[in-house]
Length: 184
Image (cartoon, rainbow, N blue to C red; front, side):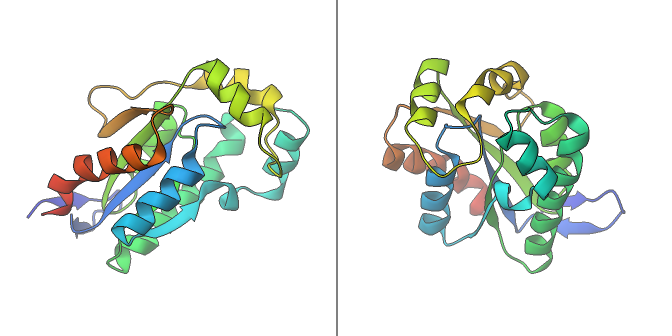
């Protein structure tokens, strides 16, 4: 059986897989993550719940977060994944994970972390963002997110899907992609 060595030197059997449903605002992370977690019977978390109030206030005011703002948020998500692994549970979490360095933080979680990147054009994303209500992220921040986004590199464990595909198909594709790992 494969094992992961954590930064502390502890080893964890790769019996837990975590999926980070990533993408810019408006890509459908919450919808797809909920459907995927339900389909696979996995724990689910929404990354927005891990933001400190200062981050939410900053974004609500139309100000993009910087790396110093994001670091504790990413570490909190990673710690939540660690708790799932330590409990022997796999999980799905939403997270923009826009840069590789952010994904690198998440990858330090115990278990096996994989990324499902919901990708779409700026036009489609803008239309989705202007059509939603009750979210603190204003559409005016979309250009900064698109400018920050670093697509998955070939050596990152991930799948890129087009957000114009219907949610059921996206989830079916994700389940098929995850099947070989989940069978271990």
